[in-house]
Image 1 (cartoon, rainbow, N blue to C red):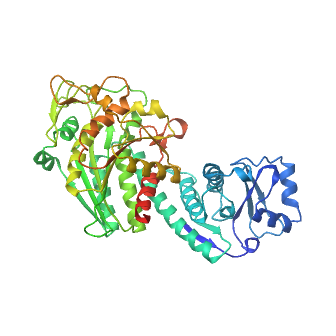
Image 2 (cartoon, helix red, strand yellow):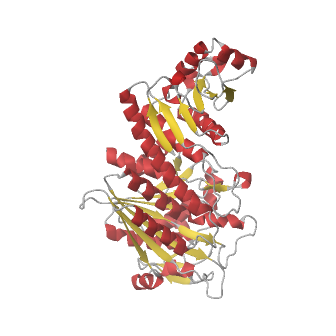
Image 3 (cartoon, rainbow, N blue to C red):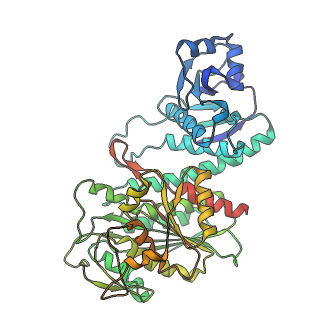
Length: 496
């Protein structure tokens, strides 16, 4: 999809669809007012006849409006002018994008950049335009014999009042498009079934990324390599699977050679049946999404490579399956991690922290500036925060604050959870250095406390995306989160 800034007269542009905003009580934006004037008041008259409320996301589609050369005029509700914030703006923009995606429209001209939004300018609004239009047009049809009707949209123009504004919009759209494409890769990988998207498939995807972008280098560690490194925890999880585990290591070198990298470590469980501690059968198919952390790392690296960001980033994705088998780990087994610490397995379904702890230890060799791990780690996080916010844990306040701000700016929000020493008391074992679970209380926190024991040597944050990585029900599918949050964080690191 092509995104371009437009500075001409909107009423003279021959295009499939023109988008303009309407506030509550039929108060028109500047562009909508122009079209209303050229139509000799017909636009406003129809709004009143249709009892248009103008709430954020309300839509009214008109055809062949007099005085306007666009085939269609899509009027979008914005709410009260003084109350338009980032969330309401994106709700309106997303509604318009979805309406366009469902129609036969091939080209659209949006004037919504002119809408004032609290604390956000042209750059941000243009970025959201590119991101939301691409997201609205996303369809996962790879495994359907007949994909059905797909969106026709191939060009989005964003109207700007000046060349200076057009330059800002162009930069924003470039970022938005790159973030959306990273989200698309993340969603495509996550939506694939476990019999297709195996650890080997993830590894092949990483290799293809390296072929596409010259600043990306990929190394795939096999199980024999992990054995030499002493990754007993990661290998213990893979014992029940016929698919060999992979440790996928991506290095993006866009900065100076001496610059410390930001490390992203993503859980890549391509299917999680729980192992011997078998999960309930209901909704077990959704456990193909247990690799969304790893998928988000690949998606984010695609985004930053496409933007050619001048910084260094390392992505580490431990990937395996967790299945019941005669050779699978059992409750009561004790394994030795790469860090030399021993872990008593009390529940084989608490496997994510096992593959992550060895990956985090491995990441130390890159001397990272910061380390962020991303994982669909605990159902307890979903209970605590629902589907709206990602759980954030960190041993560094400045890193936590930067991630929270990135989440707010990208509308991919996180909420900080405690990581107090008192919670470590729940991780005691009579037979090993620690168990892989605590008691039933504060499960998301004790999981983070487990990981914290392997991150004492660097600035670290943990994102529990169990509630935000995918939708269930009729709209089942991956969300692409937290690619926007991670991308925004990395972009901000360049700007600072």
